Length: 162
Image (cartoon, rainbow, N blue to C red; front, side, top):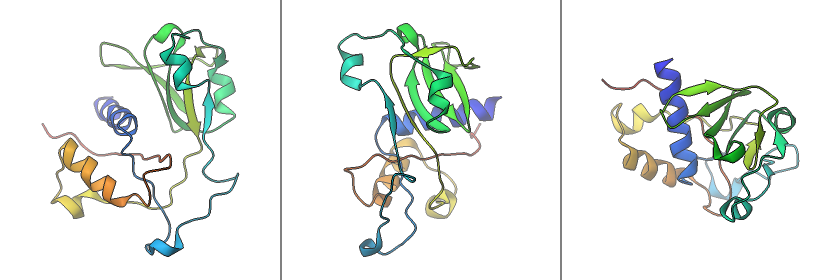
């Protein structure tokens, strides 16, 4: 469970910092992908501005979110933890730092969900001699983005150094 928790926390930190890497198929800037409704759709339950305005009452169930993808972030009713949706499994990250499994009847006042599709795989060990701190990771991923004006998703897995 330790490795899974670290992976989930890394994904939360990465995506919420808006520096997630978008993987594109072509290495040539002039041949960036053309997104369609089948690829690259982001479903959003409510809006971030509604959440900022204090609308913390969940209206959308996790079951409803599943219809829109297998990967995402959000929060739970009354801001009771951070939501991580990874590989079609919802987790609730509570203030104790642990990840808990959820049930489909739970509600969310805000979530972003998509179907994760790998377009490109980056191997960090080749770029960093096997080790990156968080700011180095952000810098490396920022260099991979075709534009900073779109939403991007990324999955990061690895082993924690002890």
